[in-house]
Image (cartoon, rainbow, N blue to C red; front, side, top):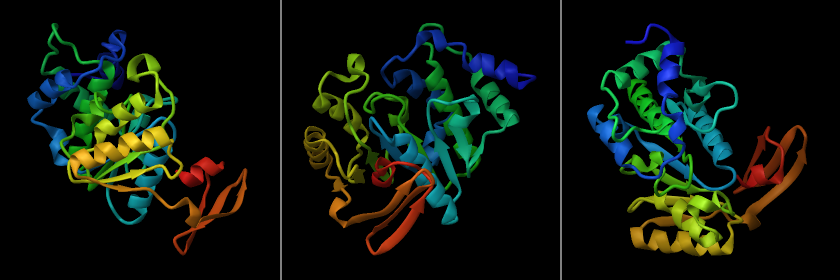
Length: 257
């Protein structure tokens, strides 16, 4: 349908004026018409206020180094919208983006219930990861969790909740507990949940309650077992669980991530 990448990009951004609209019904309807590409991948689902992008990227890097074919979905982007959709560390190509945007456009968007720009991007990402036959996809939540487009997935290998604090209070609530309730909405039944080692107490209570409701196991790293040996502008060196590591990211918070 589209003859070049610019046309595809204009289509994908054609509903940007809608902004962020909570709810999963629009994306569910679109993915149904696309024969549910989101059901063809396995996911590590990452929510939180701070650190979810770093955790998603580091997890994808670790899995790729271990030999897996890994998808990565993040938001927002810095310079190029294609940064949001990656496979094995490489952005989706302009030709693949154009091809998959054409598949979505060919369906015709319903005027009465237009998908948002983020929902269109998520749909394209699910198509891409299925097409690439990714072994696992690291899926970063866009906003909140419970009603976020990424929460359209039925199950996850692991649900991850990074540090929670006050953010998007007009949408998610004006207390840490309320916000944690929305973030914890990504927790699926009988799965493993990993949370930030220095999680806010109010947030942790909510996460624990949600895990109990879903019969899911909660894992929180033991901060007492962490020893940071060096942290400077070149990154951080630390030992944990009888293993020592180096990361190129700056700041103790990245070690906790």
